[in-house]
Amino acid sequence: MKQILLLSAILLLSLSIFSQESPVNWTINQERVADGSMNLIITAEIHHDWYIYGMNMSEGGPLPLLISFDNQQNVVDWAKFSEITPAETMYDEIFGMDVSSYQHHTEFKCNFVPKTGVATLNLVLDGQACNKVNGVCVQIQESIPFTISE
Image (cartoon, rainbow, N blue to C red; front, top):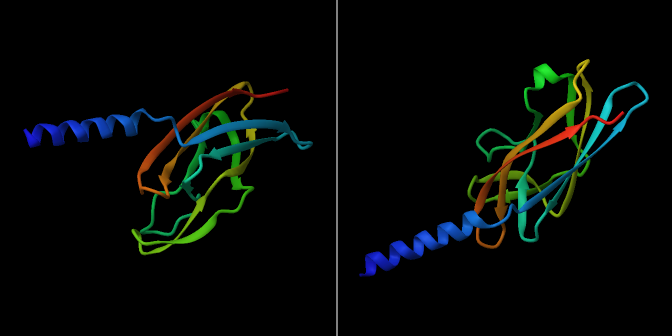
């Protein structure tokens, strides 16, 4: 009987963790630059008590946040992703090293040149969000389609 109750509790806990909404809400805004390239401003609204790992991680640390375009080599001639909001550095006991992370309202920038004839792109975000209170981490895998503005 105890095994059935334990198994049921674990199952319910697993379902509640996976049924929660994403701890990060993403939005994008774009603008054309005078040189003909595009700037994409990517905003992450990270829920209270959560953080996402940074874009630049040392070897042996957590997986970094990766931002790219789906099928990038076929849709853009050139793209450079960078931080607008600098990552915070903190010591992580699990990894035994300093790691970078973002919290609250965070912004990134992509300057890119779309290939001729490409009107729509998919922005791909891949990383990890962790809860500061209970240590739970979830994979972030978002794909945001958008049409290039004129």
